[in-house]
Image (cartoon, rainbow, N blue to C red; front, side, top):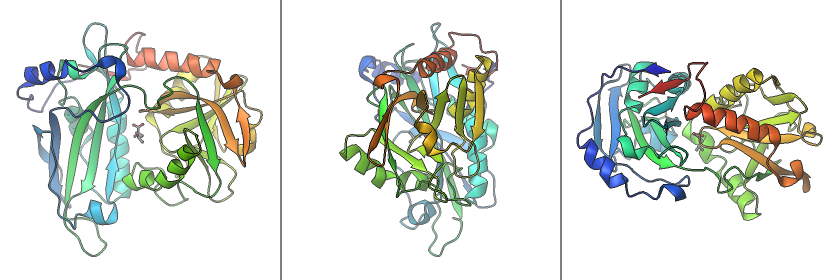
Length: 354
Ligand code: COI
């Protein structure tokens, strides 16, 4: 793992923060906001570069009613996690990948973005020792935002931008934890279109699936699996995560082609699975392949790896591993999380240790 030399000022009162947060019931963390005491903010004007970021007390921010992000959705977000190691040190998983993805998204959304170094440096500054859950109890979710905060009326890039990071200790994303989730395919709603922004982490990609997700939950499903909007035949992803299909020794996942979010967990799983002897294919995965797959699982920073117990398509339910946790999902989950928690050797140099 790498070590970081810091260029950002240390947080004041960090020991107070640590003690306040020591009260947390670490055993019952879910994926709900538990605000911590600080947030990081950095601003810049259009055409300029970001500088002079600072830590502030966590709280509401002031925005013009005509801010670009509020009126036209000029905004991106990221998500990354910090884990506490057995020895007390903190591990960040591939933060420079999130920084890079934000830069690519910012280019698509006509926004300036922080440098990789600024992003990574700021991501490390927001937590005291106790805010990162104890080993095995969860992680600290780091949520960077980039938004057009300047005022606009006509449609145009905003004149000012804000980069903000807040953090929250989290446990499992789905209430099921590592237990299998149940998906339905919504044949009417599509998450992304060719030439659109499905391949970048814009805030709007997530708002646009809320209706389908809410309807699926009302029917008792955990979430929705979306198909491509052109052929209505190829798997894309789930509302908040990528998808993988397992058949024998072959693991397939939709290739990154503009409509798929390039997940960092997705990318990491591909490497981990290959290192364990699986054949991994990034390609078009037809919905029919779900019928004779052995296992399906989802991946994401928030979700980690979530085995899929069933998928319902046109009212027909396809079950996997009798609704139990798939062996391949379990194996990859263990390999990935052990690596993220520093329990196995970081051969790929993916961890930043603090
Ligand atoms: C993540 O997995 O970090 C995400 O950004 C997905 C979000 C919907 C929680």
